[in-house]
Length: 488
Image 1 (cartoon, rainbow, N blue to C red):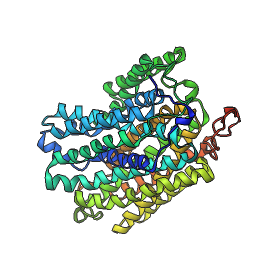
Image 2: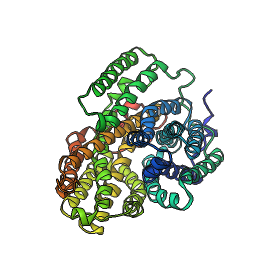
Image 3: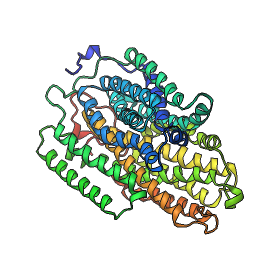
């Protein structure tokens, strides 16, 4: 039964509650990326083949992209607080299983459970939408900024932690933090929700649509993860693409007939939703390319290749960290800018800044400060601001009851784009190698950065369809159609 309360009993999200959400976002972001630096260690200790290691590295993002819309819908129906508490304990369970795993199947189960927890971001958006309407854009930034910083923290801390304490503590330490935050959230987050937000009394989850969407997204993401080994036009890849298309078409048909669809097709057709999803997908691809190329460039053996830095895993982490730390502060700042200028202006400026950072990397990447500056501008400032502005614009352009689902569409689109970006990066490096060293050439890196710069400015063609200046919170008696953002 959904929470409800008279207006006189409404609670607000206190600074303590907001701090709990921010630290939780850091911890979840860290858990999302800790397997990356320790993958060689996991491969050795679990006796994994290259193909099995690749499957392990993609399980979390597969699980998060597939289950995100479902968990977000449940948050819209039954309350952000309730769903957030459930998901924190799912994360604890998943990370605990990953820490205890001594075989690939057990590790995959743990990573799949952790992936479900990645969808906690849209759930947090649903929560702040309920309690921070007047500071919504800022609140979104206070969630997205720490999440991005957490991903950087996971990359930086995982290697040294594994070297000092073993790979199990790479999962155990964030697990203990999330468990403590789950207990703190029970006390710090408001128990009552705003009236008129919940629809669970007359609406339930449409499980047929949820199953079909899970099959469609799961097949697509699984296929994208295998294409580097199987190829685009093999029987296996084409069969999986066919399954994705058929299940996707069946999902559309089911959603049309459903009285309470999982993701309303009219919601997807809203200007602020479809446009944000398209931009998120292209941004995901454009940001995944440098996120893949920069570590490869740093680790390139300079004495053999003639360029690169011969950086160890820990050194690579240190080079990456300033960009993610910068994103932690850029998130709240860009959320405030959305309040002043609107999502459209901030996204456009952020995309241009991202392109500038990538073009800088095309021309200058021979000194450590070149790499750090390129990463800070492209990832820390550009991608950090664009991500926050996209989420803030999407939240402002839908009904409060659709907040979680709409933002989960953004997250799924960005995940699909990121998966494509990784494949593009791998193809770029493998297409131009030195015949003697068998290593990628410096020109292949230049081309990759240039391609990413072109990708991130493509969404400027549809920038007019993004939400503009955020509207003031609607007052009782004011119709939604009069809202310049929500009515777009």
